[in-house]
Amino acid sequence: MTHGRQRHFTITLVPLLVLAVACSPTPEPEAPDQASPAAAIDAPATDPALVPGRQFSEEDEAEYLVRFQRLAEGGQTGLGLLMYDPLEAVPGAVEVVPFEPIEPGSGRIETQALRDIEAFAAERNSSALMVWRDGVLELERYFGEYDRDTPIVSRSLAKPLTGIAVGRALKLGYIESLDQPVADFVTEWQGDALREQMLIRHLLDMRTGFLPQGLAFEPEHILNRAYLHPRHDEVIIHDYPLVDPPGTRYEYSNATSEMVAVVIERATGMRYAEFLSQELLKPLGAAGGDVWINRPGGMAHSGCCILLPGQTWLRLALLLLEDGSWDDVRLLPEGFVDEMTRGTPQNERYGLGVYVAGEFIERRGFANPERQAQFGILGVLHSEPYLADDLFLFDGNSNQVVYIVPSERLVILRTGGAPPQDLEWDNSVLPNLAIAGTRREEGETMPTPQRVPGS
Image (cartoon, rainbow, N blue to C red):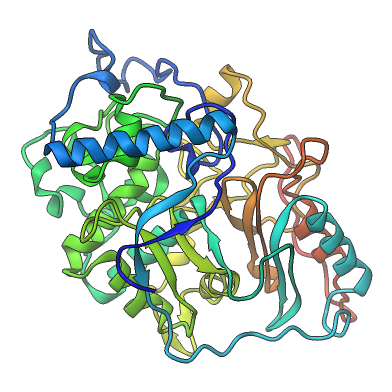
């Protein structure tokens, strides 16, 4: 892999021009904010997302328009963005020893349960599937042209990675705490009374107060510029609207996660790719990949757009399963995983880059729950409660999921494209099949199931 390379792939989108939904879980309509008058910032007379921001060099603006047109053309065909350009290498370990799967049924999970898991994933346009239980890889399958070495287009699987990256920076002392102001690193915000209230944790729990994700069809729209511009980090820092005071409201936003790369680079003095490589992938013995950067030598996209093989994502999940330690070496601060898996008053089902079980709901969306209800956004189906209430997961566009169940010592990974329209994804199926299909020793009980309202 070389600096500045391109990788061609397909991000399937609805046949429309969709802002940064190429890395967002669910396209959602833009709408007036529904926060209470006490929490919301006074609405400006004009749409802040269309207020002209700073213009950069003619070369940068021309490159932005080329990218915008490329996304527009892909959206019209339903294919979406066809390449990340340029890419920067994220080197992995020098010697990668892959996990080898055991014979199905020879571990803790019954053969039929593993068959049912594989069948469910195979029917739903999956690329990779892994089931890890109690120290062994009980199932590993790849579909189509994918294999163990194929880089997975992460989409929003990159967001929990930002949480892990911040945790590593905390452990190394580059960041003081989750409650340190972002303005300590983004000094351009010093003196801005509202932006000075934004904390590091808000970059991970989606409470920055930034304009939420939505649909945008104009090249001048801030959502498109914050995604495609060759200086997207500067666009976010200087032009991205704040619509709520930080910490007061959950709103899903790619720009929120994109700021993590800025903080990591300024806090550590390392490039984002270098930091991930040296401080996470190599200590984990994981294979590397590539990350999209906005221009040669520019800023990485941390909210999406990193390409890593399936077993690397598995190792990242296992790091959290092991409470931030790997081979008896603590990579994340003690108690950090607990912080990651704790919801907020504004959204009990979202922690620091990961989704948590919370109380059972049949459909859980990615947007603010109030907006999901207001606009009739279905969200991801959960046909039944999770059989373990400590389950948490990575969840990205097209139902790319990594379930982590500490009480069961269980990790399940599924990546791929969106399922066929007649086979809806159901988030409860894979973990519940594995938990229900686990052979238990005498006296061993089932885990505590997810809470059900009114029970």
